[in-house]
Length: 133
Image 1 (cartoon, rainbow, N blue to C red):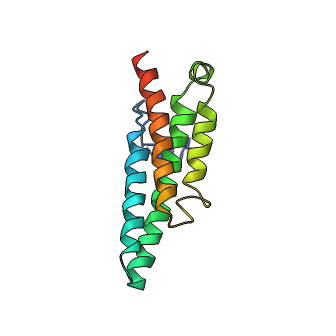
Image 2 (spheres, rainbow, N blue to C red):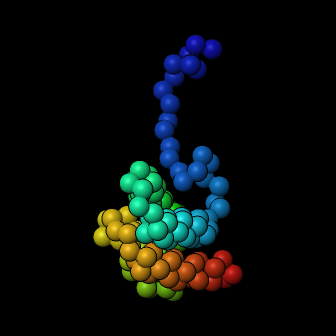
């Protein structure tokens, strides 16, 4: 019993607690929708405490968008998908940059949020085509 308690462990990492094989670009889209809504709320509110809290949440949501896109890119999409959709690497790169410091994470620009949503929609279209195949 004590040997099991003190035995070396193997650490693994996945986008969830168990590599379940369930992927959906909707996760990234929901976070991006939240970003867009937060940008609108910040624009309509002069309370500095509210604005600070909202900006922190927006930055966290932007990181989540990047995370969800990277999970799709690294865990779901396979070489055959990249062969059939050669623009996929560029789309994921552009979307993660739109969620980064020069995009929704670092700015309060609703236009950037709209661009991010459009890129996620393009990725989702490819994703669902691969699921139907």
